[in-house]
Every structure is written in C-alpha cells, then in structure tokens.
Image 1 (cartoon, one colour):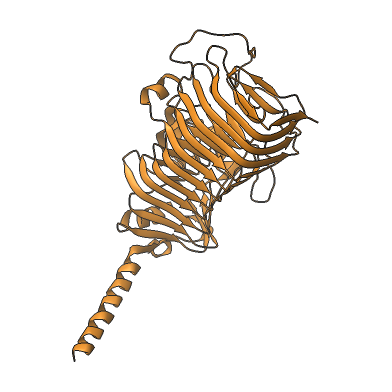
Image 2 (cartoon, rainbow, N blue to C red):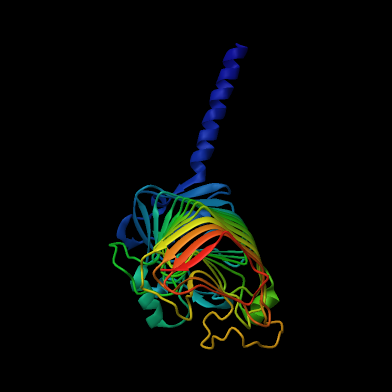
Length: 421
C-alpha cells in the first residue's frame, strides 16, 4: 500500500508540474493574435506579455504576426517558433514616441518594435528560430516623412540586468537593429542580424543601420552570430560629449567571439564613447567583404577613454569598393582621432581639456587582412594626447594605400607586415 500511495503522489506531482509549465506558456493566438500577416496583432500580443506569469514565456507560433511596438517586462521569455515572423507595421502611428538614448544623447524617438520602458528590469530573453522583421524601408521612409522623432530600432532593451538573445533572426530596422542601453550580464548567441539587404536580397537605401549596439553596457558576450550590416556590425558606445561624461557609465567587459560578418564595418568603438570603453576582446571572427575588422573613433570633444582593447585571431578579405578612404572610413584596421573631421592634419595639436579622449593599451594580434578599399592600416592618434600602449603582433595587412601610423607613443610592432598591393 505504501508503494501505491507513493506512486500516486508521484503521478500527481508530475501532473501538477506539467500543468504549471503549461500555464507559464502564453501562446499569442490564445489571446486573439492572427498569423495571416495582415491583421494587426499588437493588442493581443501585448496582452499575452502583460498576463505572462513570472518566469513564463510568450510564444509566437508559426505564422506572420503584424504588430506595432511591444513592451517586455522582467522575468519573461519571448519565444519565436520555427516559421514564426514578427512583422513590424509600416505605420509610424503604431510606434508611440518615447525618450531613448540614440547617437549618444537622450532624445525623442519612435518606439522600437520590441522595447522595455525606462524602469529597471531583469531576466529578459528573446529566443527561438523565428524572425523579427522591423518594418524595413517602408517604415524607415514613413518615419522620416512623419518627422516627429528619431527613427526607432528593431529591439531596444534598456536598464536591464540579465538579457539573453539567442537563435533569432533580426532584420530591417529603421535604424540600429539591436540596441541595448544601460544593460548588464548580456548574452547574444547564435543570432542573425541583417540591415543591408531586404527580404528578397535587394539592397536597401537605409543609413546608419548598425547591427548590434552595446551602449553603456557591462559584462556582455556576443558569440556565434552572423551579421550583415549597412553600417557598424557591432558598435560599442557610452554616450556623447558633455551628456555622456555626466552620465559616466562605461561599456566594459565585452567579449565577441566566433562571429561571422558579411557586410558593413566590423566591430567599432565609438564614436559616442564619452563615458568610456574598457576591457573589450574580439577573437576568432571572420570578416567577409566588410570594410574593417576594427575601428576606434576617439575624436576631439568626446572625452572619455578607450583602454584594454584586444583584437586577435581574426581574418578579413574585402573585395568591395562601395566605400573607400573618406571622413568616416579609413581602412581595414583603424584608430582615428580625426574621425569625421574635414581637417586632417596629424601634427596640428589642440588644447587638452575634458573633451580630449584617451586611448591606452590596444593589442592587435594574429590578424590577416586584405582590402581593395583604402588603407590596410590607418592609426592616427591626436597629437595633444597620442595613443599609448599600442602593440601589433603577427599581423599581415595589405591595402591599396600605404599604411599610416601617427601619434602612437612607443608603438610595438612584432613580426608584422603592413603592405600595399
């Protein structure tokens, strides 16, 4: 009898756990969402999010679900099943105006397709095999024409501890695609991010379409992702000018590894870096027809610091001449204190003040790169505050223009070949 009683209790416990698990999954179709790609489902999906129990998940099943801005909350997972598409509306009125940090400053923006509000949050995950399509060129053009605010993003997560983005494909944002602001303990793994080409493979005319932006974020890992960007593939930022220095939250302890980049400008630091950037490692990544592996942009007026940066075991082969040497792009490997400046004179100093940035301890190791656009290497610090602690080791870079290294104090080059072809 005791054995039977124990067996019945065990069965009951298993049924209870199964029931609890079922209750924690909120399928959006149970709340009225229709996956026909034409019916606006914002309210139904938001209701599923609002009613999702703590620790539960909101499931987007197979189908195409048209919606406007959605707002996630703490302790939840948004799961997109295989064959699921969350399709952003092309109408700006479906994205309420909110204040976000964008291009380093707090300013009025259209809400993104997926958001958090300004309150502190924790434990938010976006996972699955589905697609988040953020409205593309039509929304981009509509927001510009409407003109009430700056363009929104595909995903904008703010002020959140513990963020996971895994497996999903995110594409066609009106501006930056994945934007994380003031977040900590971040894992972005196995995601695909595309901003340069539309669904049918045709090139878009959007600009400033970064892939992933980590903005005053700490303890982040980006691993095993595929990124095809119109602009920076990954940009690490921390605010701009006086406002960025006042907030003073650096981006730090960031690791990018085993990623593949197929268009855009590689991994960038800045140009909004006034709160500082430190302890960044990029390793074991491939760059195919991207214009750069690394671009560090510590320009006058921004202040802040860039320090303890390592790029190692990466390769680049660029056969595209869509962009060549210009104000915003200098080469396959570049650190440019004169980024976006019309006046490029590496010997013309300026007074040192709070707007003078610092670049200290940059290691470039085991890099192989060939580019038909611009220089292979363009490293130019500010004469009033040169780059310190630059080490280039086992690097083979070839470009169409001769390499340039200026204003880099006691730079160390070991077993390095910087050539022209």
